[in-house]
Length: 475
Image 1 (cartoon, rainbow, N blue to C red):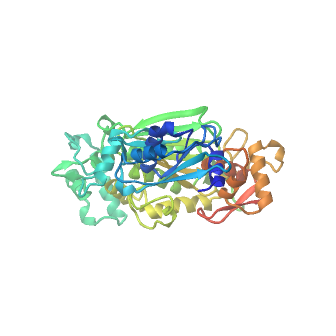
Image 2 (image 1 turned 90 degrees about the vertical axis):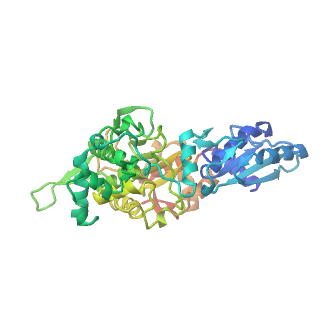
Image 3 (image 1 turned 120 degrees about the vertical axis):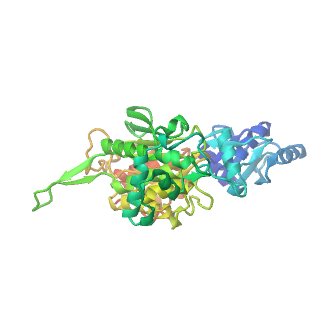
């Protein structure tokens, strides 16, 4: 890393992967953040940069280097933290850079005996339940959470009609052997892999429990319709408890309530044609994915669904399974579910596809309907799916009416600057745009949102797939 790259990072402000420290007087808190980066997606800590992004540097002595080495030794297991010293020309000051690369198979990482995670720009102690789950996950032969026995749960606590319906649907859909179809709920649970040591396991309770939240309060779904493009004002806000099927049904009902449907009468036909704003099959798959791939082991975890004027966001507690990252997500062609028992039951119902195929289907169906490409993001706690809208849902706009206009007068200074860069360079990536922005601090996510806004207004359009997208002026 050089001074130019450091200046670019400083201009972008702190984020879930970047932390500024004025000096090594803050060394202990810096290593807590380093530990959080190791338990997340990696990151960079810069010493000699103030909280507001001003590069000031600091003096470096042998004592400074010894202190850095001594604190690094307190991270376990052994971590990949590259420490470099960048001299500021014509001074005796340096920028100290911690470049953190993580190995998900070694988590949880500890600093001085404690684990930390990154939540946006904050470093916090890792929840004990999450630390325990990671420890179990990487222990040889460890029993997963969904396979563990749900103590004192009997058939009386389950919706036996839904159990039998699952077997019937699975047989009719050709996704389970017809011999599995039965009128005996206990036998059905055995066929579905929901019995351990002659007792119902956690997956069985989460899938079919009448009131699973009494045992596991994380069986919850938070839903909201926001006014505008941020969380400052609610139009509606709901919190629903229940099993997987209850949560799925309520989520789809909420989406149906707040996402418009276009009604037309095709020429020469007398029957009305209704076209949902977002494809129903993609919405069902997106919610089902969140339900079957979330981390149920943490009592404080949840799934949240937020509808904004410009996008739909679905967040679930839990990271991608081992072997899956944002970099290879689009290449995924097989299912690697966190909770295979739960995922299988939804698959038998034809509620969701195998995970690799399901992700591609969500993206393909939304793009086919004219929307920008959906994308996934991750922080230290969970996974966020964003589905951008082709039209604003704000007051005064109707589905089928693009956000107006091609007049720059209504644009913010930030939007105008980004338009100027794209018109000057021609086709360019978001990284190239960030490099060109001066005195404007943007995170990658904020820039992506601004680009989507400009795309919706017809100023720019994208070229290429998700990993190689570039932006150009015009449509």
